[in-house]
Length: 427
Ligand SMILES: [Fe+2]
Image (cartoon, rainbow, N blue to C red; front, side, top):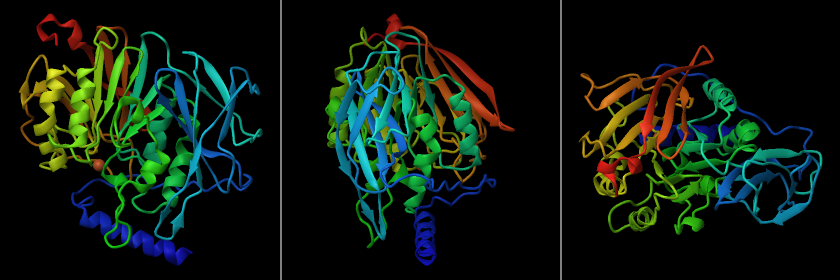
């Protein structure tokens, strides 16, 4: 078994080098975690539990069991209460010589807002989990971290996020850094379970989720799509790789940087229709997540088609819809731009913020283009996470929390005014 894992690791390194993932110099990061399955768990015990929003008042509960188990969630508003139950579907996948556990997805609800629910999965009454639903009204707080991985820095970032009293987690791609070594997906699921079983985690894909190996495994996103099922049907999308959702007064779009985005693509047509349906009375804020940033003054990841061409095709749609903020990952450093459109400052454009430095093993992208472009307001190569607290229909506070000596330090913050409240930028 160790021999097979060694071969898979070598294959992964080859694939990453071929993809240019290791092609620039970064300082050494902290080591990868590997969290094994707990020995005392039975073969039908739930593990790797995470939850995600589905529509205005439902939640998808996702978990994995080692062997066949019933896809059922029993839940209520008091510990041990099983007033409600719901069943769902079970899937699994194969990847080279790896076969996943049984992956269960169950949608529960309708749920009351701002309420703690207690839940149990697959009739396992020895493990009770709980989550809190989002509030019904402003304020609402999002935590955001891209390129998370599973290192000591990831752990530090997760600890800080846990202390932030956030409502919803946003993941703009590059989640587990399994990079074809499938047991690392399981390890990542165990690492984040304490947080992701308590608050909805909403993700979109990055390049590290593709996981194709030439001649060996040609289907992209096999593990990501099986494990991180997102509510795409609810927003009219036909792909798990892009979707939108609404929570309180915020319309959140999760775009797919690694699927087609040209004007003839399904994603482009879906985005155009999705943005056209936004009602700024109901959702005064519109936030977009992508993986590869459209604005970037770091020397890393310059000129990639997912940045250059996706921006060329889609930025006009975002501008016309008066998108307030675009969060991105991919570049392992923090950077905040002023409101921009078509490369220049524009008071009706989106604020672009890169948070691709949650803590992965590749380290930081420390080299910047000199001199700093005027539209780049703040840039810093550090691990950490962002918090976006939407206070009301007109004002939101974004803060960047740098991991420094394992302390969370606010090193950048900015108050944003919604474009829907600016008469000069009305749609
Ligand atoms: Fe990436």
